[in-house]
Amino acid sequence: MTLDDIDFAQLYRQHLSQSQRQPKAPADWDRRAPRMGRKSLGGPYADTFVERMQLAGSRSVLDVGCGPGTIALLLAPHMHRVVGLDYSPGMLEQLMVNARRLGLSNVTPLECAWEDDWSEVPVCDIAVASRSGMVPDLAEALIKLNAHARHKVYMTQLVGGHFMDPELIVALGRQPRSFPDHLYTLGLLHTQGIHAELSYIEMPSRLAGASDFDEFAQRVSWSLGELDDEERARLHHWYSTDSERAARGGAPMRWALVSWTPPSPS
Ligand SMILES: C[S@@+](CC[C@H](N)C(=O)[O-])C[C@H]1O[C@@H](n2cnc3c(N)ncnc32)[C@H](O)[C@@H]1O
Image (cartoon, rainbow, N blue to C red):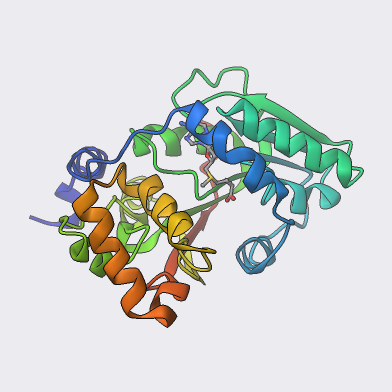
């Protein structure tokens, strides 16, 4: 068997199904939107993402799963047009609140899902998918990104597929199951003769800096689903035995930034 014999699309779907990911609906993201929208724009993740992009010669951006505009709004001052695509109306509302606050008039919200028909989605010079690529069908998502970008595609995915420290998950008595990560993207692109570029962005854990145990437990439940009493007690033990580790939220997160030139339409 060689690399060429691997069906990365199928392997990705298999891995995602084994990960037992709690599916998220637009309403789940709507509930998070006001808090995410209030965060100030920029910061180490977004600034690094944008610094690594090649913007020269590009005038338009499609940001898929744009959220409150984390990347889209940093790019807007350099672009003629920015389209923020998201399936959460709450996120799109935050995108536009932030755009108005910044005096940006070139940002358009587009309520649409990865899984929808994209025939009405505009083709832009650059397509971005920042931390929004956990899709049921990765091969299909890459086809859509390639068809909607003229110059470049930029995508970040979690390295190793763990949103939180696997040791913490073990401490809860659960089996840590990874989500599929950027290696499937690299594999799928490789089979199409696309040689992607890869770099990493390291960030503190999403559990870092919780103000108290309740907030910490809430953040854990966002990824792992409801915790039963026993698990909550175990989490409390993990949280209270090492305050420095609790403040860090365990191991940091690493994002893989994969970028490539889409094939020209035939
Ligand atoms: C983790 S947030 C990332 C937001 C922003 N791109 C960032 O990097 O901060 C994921 C975003 O993807 C959106 N999203 C999740 N699944 C989606 C889907 N199937 N179709 C469209 N948007 C989706 C969510 O509503 C949310 O805004």
